[in-house]
Image (tube, rainbow, N blue to C red):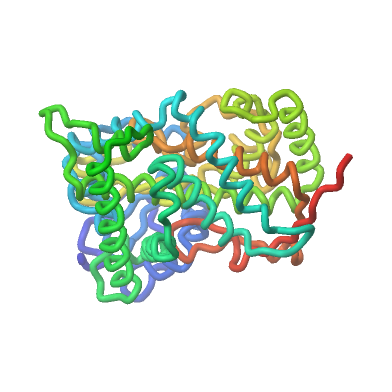
Length: 450
């Protein structure tokens, strides 16, 4: 690990105040990345430099800066070098643990499993899982919905993307392994993900278990003669441009990669959606009316019907603006990067922060107000919950489909309210993922027949 202050500071980019005795801002960044990045922007403006535990990092905020970063080639701004802390989770030979040319081919394999015709197949599966979840709820009760959505989205994602036989072979061990992977994606890992740390030891053990579980399922599929129409089949049948197939280790890594990313995005977005629906009953009533109307026109609520939900879509869009799951989109500068009259030297990191960018009042008036009726942003680089450019998250459409279909099922049958004072449902970041406070308890009550 490099030592603080070993790289030259940029002469024209303001340096964030409040560094510790070692000259680093790492302790403050680790405590709550989103809050630190908000402070850095408020103090320094569009560009702010800080010391991330020995890695000089330049925060760039706003659509113009974000577009410049997203349009830069990988040979100049490397995502892979910035995200090496994800390699123990996804595995060698997959995404950030693979050469860029291989990763791009793997992204195309993901895309094959997320085409519109496959999404049509996924919608009823998500509905089935949500219906099974609420079947035992009874007339009323309380629940930690963050944990509930985390469990549900593991099941929906697995059922849709890896098939029913995989889904129904799930054990508590599978869910626990994903929990241990998520707990290890903390701010300190961005500097040293190889540290001797209990969370990282659990991460490595969990990744080994997941790999074994997935590879055992691959072996069973190869031994059988059934045809499957899911993402696992896509991985098993796909070839690279040289004609070779993915290895079993790579297939396992692809599964973990997609499931990990989609699970956390969907679970966090669903939890925040329920909190804000309960906090804003006036908006909830509008969405319930929209959902009831859709059921009247299409009792099955197929994929095409789900695309006709402007109120629900606006609500989710506002959730992702105000509560974006990921708040540190990073690149390592490989070749000096020029932006306006600034030069960001090779060896430094560049960081984009959706949480900060989504609060720029010139693009989002009164940004702290939750408003699902905000108009769509005309500048695509002003709204970046899933990143942007060629590296925009390939699973964003599936994540939104999950949330929409889950809430159609929930709001069709139940009403929800906060179990505690509204101001106790706050943002916390025990990892790099922004989530609601722990526990996230809400009350539910069965809707009365009209």
